[in-house]
Length: 171
Ligand code: OFO
Image 1: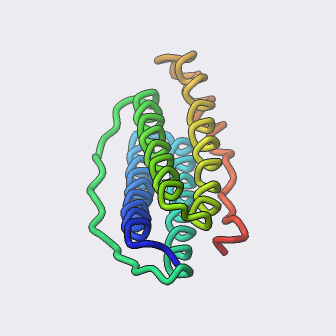
Image 2: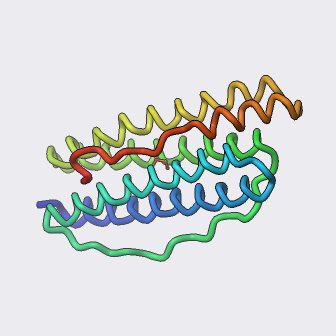
């Protein structure tokens, strides 16, 4: 069982995770449109990751007897600038999500809700990985700058990303 406060905070986070999915799908389309299929694929798999984040939280709310309230999802931008700008936007977004996850964990601690703390630990760990994955792309992007050959190489590498697999608890 979860309190109304936790239930509402989790519902809001479901909405934010849906926005993340929407954002990365929009970025995927944008990258496709500017001729970067590897970037597009990377973002498409990032979208799929976010759907896993959504589904896992959705399942948890219902398993705790909470009310699910699917709210309106904000519209993401249509354009994102250069590949470097795309990933700078992505890092800023993930840092914002990390802050939200930490706030949710803080709320679960204030409420002495141990089940939700255990549940949220998965997201805390996941955010470390999310930020690290983005930084791993940002570093070479900063090195190559505007160099087209360098960007093509990064595009090829990003195209090798594997599809995400849902954790057992979310299946
Ligand atoms: Fe759901 O982690 Fe990215 O946003």
